Image 1: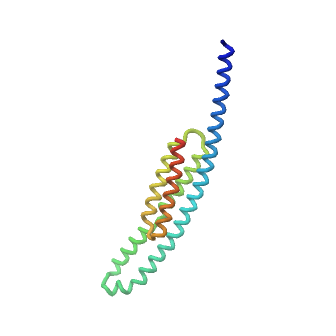
Image 2 (image 1 turned 45 degrees about the horizontal axis):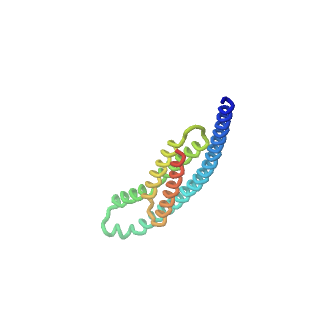
Image 3 (image 1 turned 90 degrees about the horizontal axis):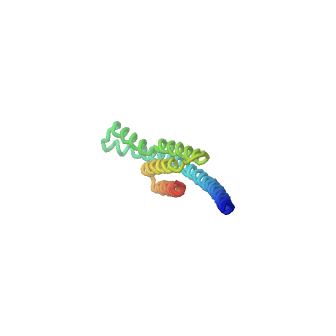
Length: 166
């Protein structure tokens, strides 16, 4: 009968509207959680960056302290300068920190945009992990390596949440 059909269609439309509303609310809550995690991640990156600068200074001081011994062993000043430059390059994480910051901002912007963003968030999660891995590999101290591993764990958790959205 037509009345039953109309009642079924009306019920379906109401159920669909509630489903859409619930999904939108869930999306807003997940976006808030991800924004909080991004803020924590950005804080961790800045903390690591600040600590690597002091370690670079410590490496330079140690090398200067060893300078008389190294020169006495007939290591040329040119060779010492090359080694110092290599140490400085290896300990410099500014490029990785910059990229992590760029990816974090792009991720955050996607969270407030409209449309399907799951795949782009997944891609940015992968990029964040690549940069965090490089940063962790460059970190010269065991204590900071632990911080780098914590950063990677944070990104992995973020990525798992994104995979649930995609």
